[in-house]
Amino acid sequence: MALPLALPGVAAVLAALAALLVLLLLLICLIAHVTARRMPTLHRHEEEKFFVNADGRKESVPSIHDPPTRELSIVVPSYNEEDRLPLMMDEALDYLEKRQKRDPSFTYEVIVVDDGSKDQTTKVAMKYCKKYGSDKVRVLSLVKNRGKGGAVRMGVFSSRGKKILMADADGATKFADIEKVEEGLKSLQPWPNQMAISCGSRAHLEKDSIAKRSYFRTLLMYGFHFLVWFLCVKEIRDTQCGFKLLTREAASRTFSTLHIERWAFDVELLYIAQRLRIPIAEVAVNWTEIEGSKLVPFWSWLQMGRDLLFIRLRYMTGAWQLETRKCN
Image: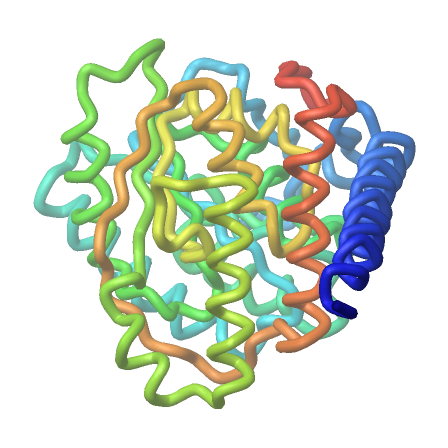
């Protein structure tokens, strides 16, 4: 006879827990809304409005809102990358120069964005500027560290290409795989309002990477992927590969709306693209893990998890809007 009497007590506990969870969710929504910066930080410091050319003279940076004058811009965010950057630059420029010889109509620029580095990243990048000329290699030095997303945005806003490629400074993706993401972009034609995005993907390598990872890192990876799928982006398996090709119009529209400036910026970028109904292709690319990653496994994943939750809640509550502004 004791069992039926216990049921009301269990129900009361469950009801209390449910109420507590609802209050907790409302509190998180309130915190996300109140602490949100309403508009993206698009300010450019005076020193960031110029780049130093191969002759050592300052030249004003162009604007993403200007008509394009190059076929392709490559934006390389770099923070303390003096050791890893040369490998990536050598491979990329070798490919780009050979492609230009085959097709003289193909024009390009590489924009290395030094994200407030404390090492010789700018000095290393300037060697390539002097070797290839500042019309092909430009170095944009940021006054202080903004985070990878902030660095990419500053490079995008200073680009001249019809298409804009994000490429990591570590050279983990074979640069020749740009042809694969270009095909992905072509497959989306006709592009609505000239907007489309093609993402390099490592999803096909997941089984091999799991075999090399610890159980803890594998658990973090699956947890992050679940949060990305559950909260933000459902159609792209690998949101974090740093090899993404955007049309100029898609880059302008998405990056001018972007709020997140650190590791989870890729997720917000794709979330914005899906909200704007910009077509997205996901293309398998070759990828090799390079030592020297700036990610701190536990804390970086924790920060990204928080950012994912806030991305969803801030757009859902209207704290963030899909508005376009110009960089100043």
